[in-house]
Length: 144
Image (cartoon, rainbow, N blue to C red; front, top):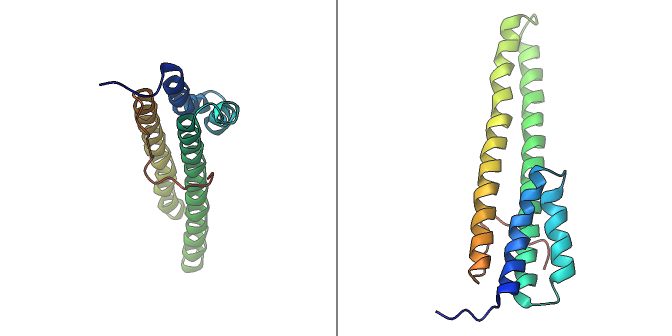
């Protein structure tokens, strides 16, 4: 099957996705590196523009979701702590044992999000290199 996109265009589309993996090595690299690639290459082809926006939007979406989850979880933990303190007459070790299982939840969620990010980024990069437009699931379309 003949692909209408040349190899350079497909490679830049793939780079928009794969460059997000730089976030594993550089703080905020998952957003900054695809953003730089998108901003410098978007005028060369509509495909690069589309895939760059998609990649940056996905990485921003993950940051928003994780930050929101963190706020909600912290609010719930404080609320539980206050309620248990009001219902408890003392701060015994058994009281603290009720809080410890809640500390495992953020670690579990972080691991799930990292695996999800890794898998979706690889799928996006491979599809872009094959000349297929890729749309991430659960993506907020912040950049239009």
